[in-house]
Image 1: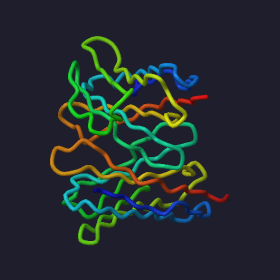
Image 2: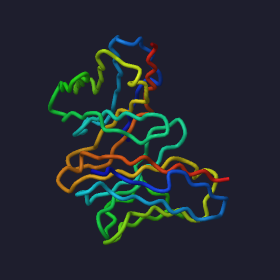
Image 3: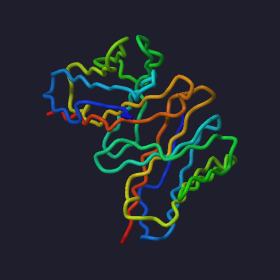
Length: 114
Length: 112
């Protein structure tokens, strides 16, 4: 019974490149959430998606960041033209439709921008 | 806005009980959570409590909620070295809210 899967686990990008982070929810889960953890900080909500729908992106930076959850395949968090301040751990969580309050987290992707 | 506060460090001896405390500000919080994060790993959902409860016990874990004071605690009985990790307190907003607001985490060190 696989949990939430994220890949890659570690990603290094140079300033100005694009970063793509992938998340496959737990089996049976249709809701995906992305959170960002800056060094020495707690996790901050970024976006909540269901299949083919962005439900709440109130925590997403206004520029360069986008997220999608297509009908087939994993959810993608995309960061264009990365800057050093984007270096962080990005966690994906998933829940079922009926228990959105019970979120299970993946292992995270640690993004380093050089 | 919502805020969740917890002390940053706690050190206990193996076999003792650990108590990790947390305060929050959002009086409409529906659920309150404890997550555990081991080095380089994701967050593991340890337990959560609905806001109309004041206690929940699950094996070695006891969660106490004082809604009046907006105070949440996690007690780990018979603490083991494998319990060494960062423990995050989190709360969800009002009814139907899915946004979890996290504290900065309490690093628990267990001394053998």
